[in-house]
Length: 508
Image (cartoon, rainbow, N blue to C red; front, side):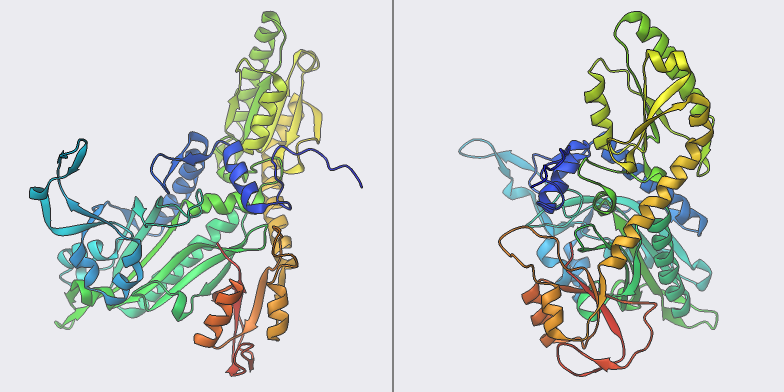
């Protein structure tokens, strides 16, 4: 048997994908579990990626007329109770504040003070439709006050039993947009505008191809009239919901009494939307692009595009190599990539060159450049392009590097997208038979980790028969793709007539 080449991450994706994911997060120094069960500490490199996501999306929101605001973390329980579907959907995930003071406990330590019990419990925000809707009810009086286009960057808490860094944690970071409109048409247009914005961001910034679709009734956001999502496929062929946009109709307007006087002088209920993405996107980035040597970051979101690694053996070499790297840093930073200066770091830490190089490979920096005395003498560098793997470096003249750096980054961004799109195409099937569906989503050896399945387009009829079979196979219907054409067929679960195919997958 051929000897397997050594990788920086063990186990590999093929051996144990869930554990590989955890090891990539750790090796790239992105995040770690905190002292609070289910919560994470996002470390500087991971947070820098989130800041780049945040900055890019924030610009897009503002370009489409939205403004940022901030609303309370704590929500009166009665607010959630006003919208029946909403409270039912989130009740099991809510953290609740019942007291406002602690006091010494009889046996030592602290306990909630009985005299400090709140008249009404407060829910730590799982999402903000209710508290923001109550605020909008005060802001909206006339059609002249509309539309309201507001976004907030915040944290939310949903009490999760099984957690995984970035993908599912008790507390996570996100943005949530909330808008109010005079007409149904305007609100529906807003819902789709944001869905398109999310898809464009995922594909152009994250290099992550997505499918836009509408959620079925069972997968819809609690209280929404319609929920739309972007779905991506990870390297283990599971789907990841990467963003959602909800048309709320007048449901929350009625619950929160968001009314206004229209141009005819009648008092009517407004139409609202909400939409959001979260730090789950970082999990999607990891699982879309990374390899068995660690993280790979698409250049448009990379905290650093280039890292320069000086290599020297004594103080004289340190001085000459260091000076050379500083001049190279200035030259590269003067170049433009995707409308910004190339981001360059110099790592001059006093550790072994090989160890230093591997740390940056595992962090996924697009271009890793080593400079030693010989490179200085030849006015050159040694370059590793991260998407090509850890062992494929080459020597280049300094001028060639500076001249080609922007193109290298652009080529890498496109190559990552193309690779992810090809993987999705190869794992996508159309299935018209339940037995074939079962085979597709059943691992050959259930006792060992195995990458299997993918995305399946199938005719369906929503209902308990389908739900029971999907639960058995641990598969979900992800969405009904918006670009799906009308097509007569039969539901593979019930045999009932169907005019459309849904997208099915195992999912995160």
